[in-house]
Length: 372
Image 1: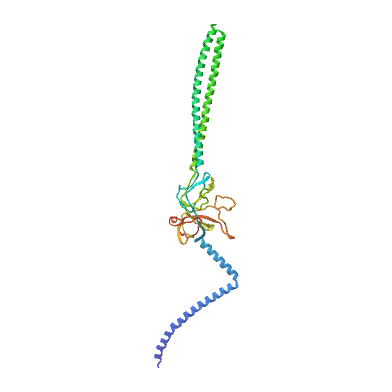
Image 2 (image 1 turned 120 degrees about the vertical axis):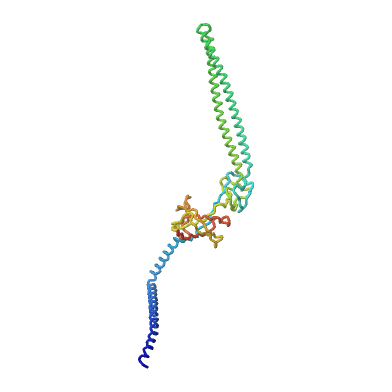
């Protein structure tokens, strides 16, 4: 074969070998990267084995930091419960229950009758006070008439005094002229003094009569207050529901004696149903009234409902030793010291209208990130 014939063949073989060489070069680079990765991984694992305690602490710190950062934006609270107003009903008068209009767990509407205390003693007391009022009013009228009589006597005695004054003046003129005796003058002066004393007596009697009107007026006012109190107590023998809701299991029965101011019936109100979530301090930053949240109640745990933050407590009591105006949240559960938590009320919207809720039932609350 000639030299010219060999050249094209060698050229073709070299052109075919070039891609293979490039492929082997690329594969070598990949093998080199993988090898380096395996080597790095071996070094890391070897360092971890040699420094297992440091690695464990670093992992825990990193996990805690991630958890802390995550809980700043995503809040899941299981320390929540359903709440409503529990109105404790106590009678304002004492006595045996004559009629009991409700039973355990009955539904009632506001102003409906719960029970009635025996009204007979209070009716007797009202009648007694009404009689006392009538007597006081009669005494007042009598005192008013006595004032009129005293004024008439005073007028008559003042007229007598005026006549005695005139008579004494005439006799004094005659005595000066020697036309009458000294005895006559003395009798005239004596008659004047007696008439003057009678006038003073009548004036005192009139003042006493006027004072008696004031006294009897006070007696009448007192009697009216007694009638009003007796009537009030009679009306309070009928005990009515202050709110609409469900009657809690009864502690009293028909015929039982109830005392004034002592709770006899409790009503779980149907008008105000929030969920109260005790949130840790770190979750309060950025939380505002009106923010949307999600919640579920334990009676229906797999369904979440949307609600809004109604209120956020601005403070809590640090001690439960005494009755405080601020709420107290227990900081320890099963020997675990928890961070301070603050009650946050969540409005349930229209859920109470469509679902039966229970006072004190457990609930869960989720607050999703708000990037607005």
